[in-house]
Length: 162
Image (tube, rainbow, N blue to C red; front, side):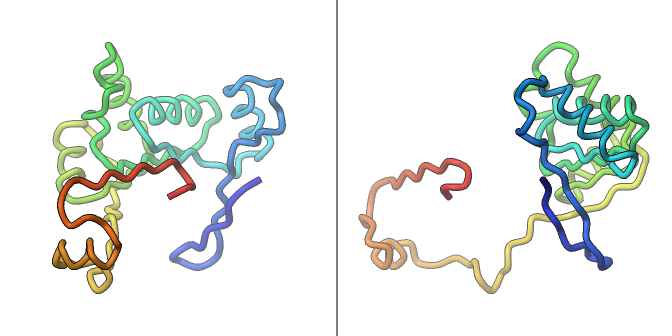
């Protein structure tokens, strides 16, 4: 099971999802099984929070694979890094990465100056097309959407239901 993504340099990149077909195996055993089955054609792309980066570094080291860390935010500001020992483990894991992607220049600078990472860093900014999203009159927008013109509007979202 996987996702086929188009590479900017051409060709395709196959991203594997953890199979849910082996419920008798623990999460870590499923990952080990999936990585071993790939026969070395794998890299670990760690994202989401500090704990995932730490886990990704562990897997990369255990299986002799390359590690890429995707920092879409400063994970040191997340709750998990308040747990004792997590921040030093996160920084050590980050320093073991073969490459890092950051959401912007300030985070790249922070990674270089405060996290001790000296490898390649690529910036992949959150892209919002300026011609599609721009400031508009709030009252007009609320009227067009059939919403009350004053008060607070709450929107709840759950995963793929957005």
